[in-house]
Image (cartoon, rainbow, N blue to C red; front, side, top):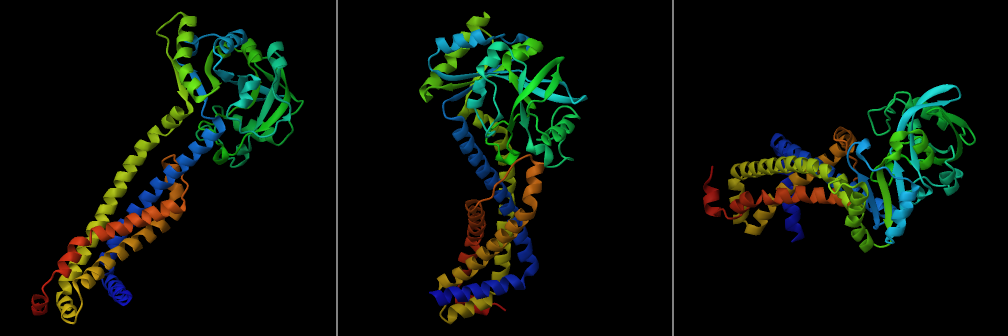
Length: 424
C-alpha cells in the first residue's frame, strides 16, 4: 500500500511540474482563498481572546447603564442620589458614576495644552482596572465630600510609541492637535505634586497611573483621558459634568444583574418624571456582542470572497486534472493492463489535486506573513494567527483539492483499459 502511494505521489508531482502554467493558476487561486480564511480565522481568534480577557477583567455581573440623548436632556444626579440608589437596590455591590468627560485648555508650566478630564469616584478603580500600581495616591471619599481640587495623572506610554501616528485620526489620537505635545512633555517628567490650571481652577496632582499599551488593554473600550478628578470637583466647574453618560454597576450575582436591568430603568424614568425617557443597560456579554457586531458583517463579506477564490481554485484544479487525463489516456490503459487497480488510478489523480491544494495553502500562508498586517490596518481589525487557524486553512485547501478531483479521478479510474489503449 505504501509503495502504491509513493508511486502515485511521484507521478502527481511530475505532472504538476510538467504543467507549470495551469498548476500555477490553480495554486494562485487557492492561495488567495487560504489567505482570506487565515485572515478571518485570525480575527475571530483575536476577538475571542479579547472577550475572554475582558470578561475576566470586568466580571460576569458587571453592567453599564447609559443615559441616551443630548446632555441637556439627561438626568442630573448628585452623590446623594447615588447613595439613595445603593440603599434602594441591595442587589448592587459597587456603583461607579462617570461624569461627562470635559475637553478644554489646560495650563501647565506656563504652557497651554488641550487636555481631557474625567470626573470619578474611588469606585472607578473597581471597574475594568488595567493601570497597575498607583504612584502617590488615588482619589478618595474625602476628596469627593470636600470637593477637593486634586487630580490623578494618567501616564500614557502610547504617546511615545510613534510621534507621527499620535494624532487625532487614529487609536492613539485625541481631539486637539496639541494634546500629543502635552502627552510627550508630561510623560517624561514626574507629575506628583505639580499644579495645573483647568477651567480657571488650580488642581494639584496627587497620584499617577500608567495606561497599558493598546495591544495589552483588556477593556473592550479604551478611552483616552489625561486626568481623573473628584466627580464633585468637576461638577463645580463644568455644568455639563453634572449630567451623566454612564454608571458602572457591579451586581452581587449574575441573577441580580438581570433583575436590575428593568428595575433601574423604571426607577430613573419615575425620578425624571418621564416614562418615555430613553435609557439603556448592557451586561458585559451584550456589550461584547455589540462591539463585534459590525466586525462580523465585514468578516462575512471577506469569507464570501474567500469561498469564491477557493471555488475558482477548485475549478482550476478540476480542469488541470481533466486535461491531464485526456493527455494520458493511453498511459492509464497501460497501467491498468499491467495490474494497476481502479483505486491506484483514483489515488494518483486525487493525490495530484490535493498536492495542488497543499501548494496553494503554503503560498497563502507565505502571503499572510507579509500582507496580514497591512490588510488588518486597512480594515481596522486586529488579528492573531495561531496553529489552529493555520491547520484549518490548510485543511480547507487540501479538502477543496480532493472534492474537485472526485469527478475526474473517478472518470479515470472507471476508464475501460482496452478502450484506453486504442487511443492514439
